[in-house]
Length: 221
Image 1 (tube, helix red, strand yellow):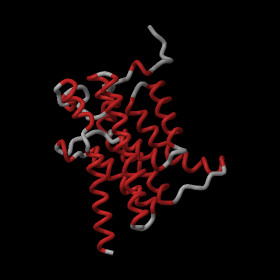
Image 2 (image 1 turned 180 degrees about the vertical axis):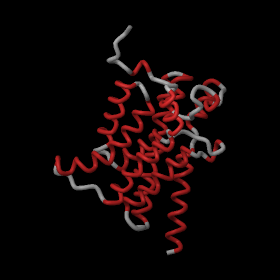
Image 3 (image 1 turned 90 degrees about the horizontal axis):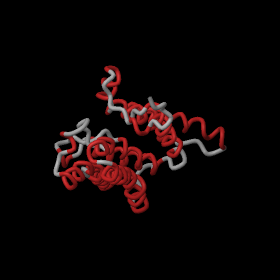
Image 4 (image 1 turned 30 degrees about the vertical axis):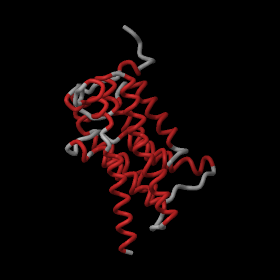
């Protein structure tokens, strides 16, 4: 029992360290010699990297951040469970994935000031919900196209997760998601809304940054 708990805590700590890898901060230092948190919106995420450094560095950040979320769910949890089963595999994957998201948001390598967790959470969801993930991604893209707000797109995609998990099984005949994943899916929107609370304030004030180039249906003046 004690050995199992120590193994679990060790795995969670490794997952947290994986999520803590400060991708955008390192990319900013390497490409421009800057701390990305001191430029643009001040956020250590892919969107701010795109605004400040361009699409190529931003693509690197997004891919690595997604991988940081997928790795604990898709590899770490399964590897441990195959050697030393601890409880339910789905719950173990949830714990490892969320530890990585917390690591990204509160990275130990940069004074516990990281990004908003969207990219790493996307990687976690890709590992947990491979069928639902593309639908959430579609929601993100559609909202971005029509509003131009990455923050609104992120919150909308997160909110759509529990909806898709509930409606897909009866419509497609797929097995219902386990209760642990359903409960987690209900918590995801609240976490994303919490990490975007400053964006919500700017949306109210009308000062939120808008990704104009994404609004492909906007009428040009």
